[in-house]
Length: 390
Image (cartoon, rainbow, N blue to C red; front, side, top):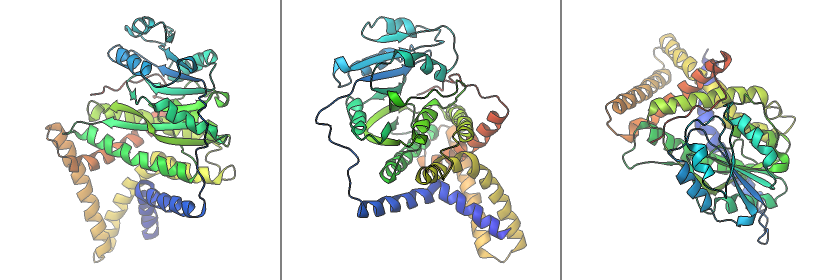
């Protein structure tokens, strides 16, 4: 029991903090021995690009998104902007149709984002596809920053950075999500410096068109699966923080929970389907990064946190004079009390960020458990589940 408890505790620590520390050390060690630039000079060459946006009932944001797309700095004759609006029942298609410089693909039936992307791919004639969401806004040089990595023939996909637009007095959903993505951005940067990213956020990522592979139409997190299928072929997923997408935080924690449950269900689905990524004999470094960064968080640690808590209670009773088990028990109780206090403060609209981070952490792990249950019950649809944003 004691040995298992310490193993579980180590896995939990490793998944959320230890991997980041170890990864940083590996990156520094690599930099000491290998001084080789990841970006190859392209002498000003710009590949042809299709900017693809799958939009569902986005009439409140679509005009701003179109304006943002048209302001991107890239050669006009090398950039095609394409909107796919399958299933949209509001004025989204009509608004886009008023812009003849944009390619619009509309279909009344709603079959999910992956089905929409599949339908749009035959219309793509460019070397690179850049995917972005309808409710996010890109910096003007985003595409230029992404495509510079493709001069390296080993790069098959490039992920941009996701940034959360937060007010000064953020609530729990904003503060927690913002902190989470800042930490994630650091991990992505170090993952790429070591070898490759193991994910791509749908807010902004790109691929070589020639490497695109259809994934199953019921895919829940399409961005992750498209990028990882390319990684499974032996290509690198690069990361470019100077290409970023800005998105408002979820309207509240209920909306953030809905989004996280869907992502977690998709994470379990992807673990079951990405066989090569999890096989160390295929690519040991990729497998190490994939399991450390994604698999443990989605499939292992949420359950271990619950088990470790009750094991700790048992061990304090078995060894009442052991100060280490008592201290660990008090620390766990204090942490969950802080999370509960964060929830209470959010309900009362009192904004103290120090309590929002433990609350968001617990929320995230609850979502992972709920997403796992939902997936195995077959209740998670691949169709868009729009979360309301601030």
